[in-house]
Length: 267
Ligand SMILES: [Zn+2]
Image (cartoon, rainbow, N blue to C red):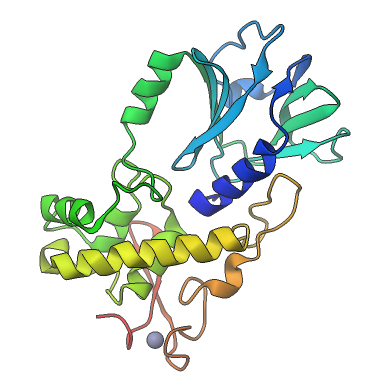
């Protein structure tokens, strides 16, 4: 599933091509399973900005018209000059010799045309973006303190606290912070929260630099390319821990999600 670094990569690649004046749109026959609002009249409208919060891309036409796009499991946007030769294209903006195409083989993505108020209501359900200054050690510690009996790693996946997080990020954060993924939050201190903050910064920086992480059959960027960040992972789907370079990585399931850790490096 695309997480913050993958969504940010797509955002950066498309931003270079904006603004785009919309001349035509195309929709697939199954678009209703992805797009949950009507398409407004876009005559003369331009996609002027592309913002992001967590894993949501926000195309801005003007101050009261937006398209929010959540990529789900396998969604991606492509920027191209010609029609892309791919299956599963569900929505296309066409304008000024450019095509902006939404591709989504499994169709777990969601899209909504929103006015400003609707957009704000949607975004209120999300916590601070992982790259925001609000995501500091004090904030992380306050979230941990509210959930003393919960295990740390599943909590790090919750978008209402950590917008943009996902399974590989949460695994790598626990590893880089040297904390066992099933450790209860009541056993974690403010200094653990500081290490969690550093670990978030570290994995985000590594993955963004490598244009995201692609696993089998997974994420592709706005040019249809795979991300190269898999080489940075220290535990997620790794056999040997990338930190001590000698211990076998263990796998457990926490809240139905594959969870990887190094029994030597993490406590
Ligand atoms: Zn290790």
